[in-house]
Length: 315
Length: 315
Image (cartoon, rainbow over all chains, first blue to last red; front, side):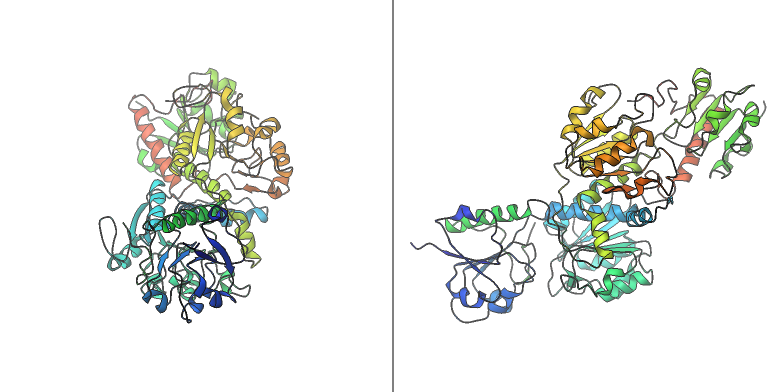
């Protein structure tokens, strides 16, 4: 038996891979070398979720890895028709980001309810200005995305007393279908986008949908940038159709310094960090090692992505 | 039977008092007229918790109201030896601020864990800088103050997965006594001050206590300013003995524009607003009307303050 070749896309070595010594021949590639290395890899580990290198290199000639794992929740950066049509199994980092992202959303919701950005602004101006803020208990949220991240967000908001509805692709017990979205959004104080990026979800938060929201409501995106029509959100905020928003993900990342989004009123911009709490690289490394051990022993892999749908179909 | 005279300290009329028409003769006083009006009042309603007018006017000559209600949780602004020694009953606004303050503390804890102030700073600079943040689940908090506000804070932090200990004046089931405070503080990631201001609690958070805390820990005060030795906190932050703090209450309120506290590194300054969510005046007014109806009908009053201890002794 030959030792499988594990090709790691990215210069940064992932922590914990040392545990695979003797069980994997670990090689590294970057965007410029991926195409030539791909035919010689049994397994591809994708670390950099901002790179489109896999999507670009995959359609080339020669054999392809039997398994691709991405150290991210979303798979939109690597999927292409050729990979979708192939026998290659794709897995993701399901689970690692759930609780951190749920806490991040809670932080944004509470910061907006308590007017914290304005408090920090007034502090810089050495100005004492008492304001009334908002109670979060008893407000209504709709979380779009019913995977483990969306469910963790819903759980955390409920723990804070927020009346929370979940919307997924398919209605089932406790989860609304897309047909309910407009009605739920029109009554919500908080709309949280946490869906995977697929052809169904791309651009789903557009001018019409922001128009459905209450003027007092706020919007948060921790899914993928292209879920949102950014210009439409900027306009909805500038015209006060809605009261505020927070984006952690963007069409273009890093967000360029000259993007108008940095200065849209009542918009919080953060650098795709919602899931990345201290120790996250370690957790992703440990999770991959566990999957590799299952794969190497011929056991079934968890976290297998439905390549047509673009996410791990779930409970 | 004559209609009782209800003296309201403060120019702003409290909402909901209209319901007492015919059952109370409502008069208003301010700091300059309180002393002369006090002998003619049956009931005194204190709205402005920043004023020391009651403490100053109370020791004068003549009869005194049989009941004083303050539309605040703390009573430190009105207590004086003469009031404490009198037969006058003192009640407070127990209950109204619990959930709002608990949410405010959660907002501060999450904002600090997720490095939100720095994110807003970087946004102003149009700078995309990914950082790792901290998970809140599994961290440790100690909440000092075991009244309804402290207990609401503990409940809310626990709902976010924080391992939370409560410290009160008297140890009892589920509540630690003051002897445990240093040990709990030395292991805590979050120290939350939510105690009433009494002779026992004044200055309890001093240089020694900040020295006990972990360098990664953070401190929040939503109780009363003088619980904290402000200079000692500023020094602890400047010298990085602790990682951060948030103060909503201060020795002097409003905090003067030339206070050095506005610019202490890693300190969030807010204008005593933690309990004041939209509708709070209404709730305070409705609560007083309910108490007045009980008093007028000769029923026992809830929320009676132990004037020696300086708070409503509790469960």
